[in-house]
Length: 362
Image (tube, rainbow, N blue to C red; front, side):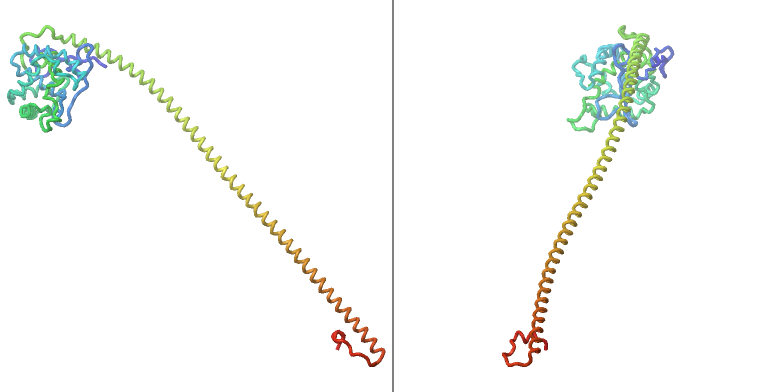
């Protein structure tokens, strides 16, 4: 990270104090041991967040400029800022959890005076130009006099509505700047009071508090803080490189594991298909064996039936032949008898029996 540049504030008078061009500075970033506060911004064309207790960077700058511009006494303002600014680091850590009871008595008086005072167009124009020409945190180009007057009207119309009105009592945030944001305003005035006066075109204060740090000291402290941040960034980059290497190694292992799992699934599919084919072939073989057994039994049954039929027919044929043979013998006997009778001639005798007549030919 490069060191911050030093230059004059736009809109100041000749001989005004030098101001730090802090892209992340001007609030809780200039002293050793204090963290750099993350930017707090708003969306749209308004410089504040409605229904929210946390003041934006631009809102903090505007309120600090109005306090310096409308202050009854520069010494009282410096003393007020010096009493409240040391609490800024702790308040920034706790933010919404910061208890206002830790603040000195009367810390809200400058904010109440701003709400009660009348904001003239000339005053708003001076603050508008200071915000546009500010070289640090909270600078904004689209702030108009109408925006400032409308903002003050909302504060004055709803003094107890931290969100500038529009919410039911149970959901209203704390009174505007009755939060940790008050310490940010005091811290900005405490460390940049001469720069704020120069931005507004005001002459330097008669006497500055001896406890206020000089620009050189703050620049050195900020440089040291930036150096620490650079070291942390380098450590994080090294850690990031290690994490990337570990991630690449894990990705490679995961890729290999997926390949192994894919091969195992393919082998399982092949084994299952082979098993199914084996089952089919076994089923076909069993069916063929069953059909062969049935055919064998059928052939045996047919053979037995044929044998019985042949035996039966053979017996019938034998009986028929026997009958035929008996009939032939009887006929031959009858012929013999007839021949004998014919040979003897006609003789009186008994008539032939009925059986004899039946066996004799006509």
